[in-house]
Length: 243
Image 1 (spheres, rainbow, N blue to C red):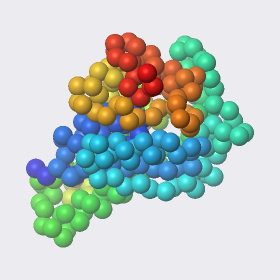
Image 2: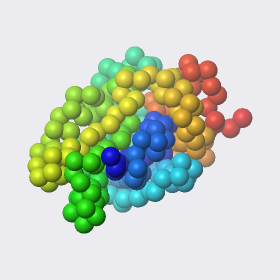
Image 3: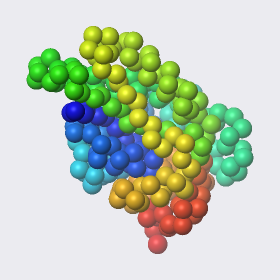
Image 4: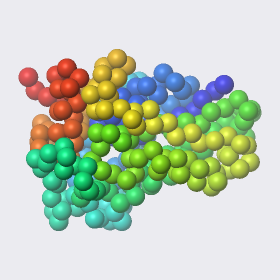
């Protein structure tokens, strides 16, 4: 059964691990990276290096207009809304932080589904691939345990989105091929993700998780703290940090 897939690759620890997994599970995989108006381009640059290292085709999509639409966020508008720093783990789960980008994963999923549906419809209608013998897979790396309170990183969100995408697609309504959303690390701790990435041979040394740009991670934002705790609990040094 030929499988077509897209993996949303931000350049971070989680998406790099999932993309490495997806590489071994799909026949035709494309890594999608979105430049969405975030405050720095460091993670986008890292995503390109990760894609080359893993050996997958990458599409970099400029949707920087999203920064004007989803402007109420420290990631798209850091001059007005500073990134929180030095928060305890207990604080991170109490409320949705200002680093949440309004409906980001909803938009990302819709774009990824459109790209993937185009590929699979082309295979069915122009390459004579049987719809009974094809899979369409969207790989994403949300995490519901070591996450910073984002509502679009929860299992129920992806359940509803998968259903909605099906109803809105030709692929499902005419050919009964579902757009499957694969979220393999959704229930893993950050330490488990680190271990999984190491087992897969994912290039974790190329990843960037910090909400800030710069030569080295800030070590103080939620993402840096979660990452540091993950590597520590997994028993591995962070290969992306200088010795």
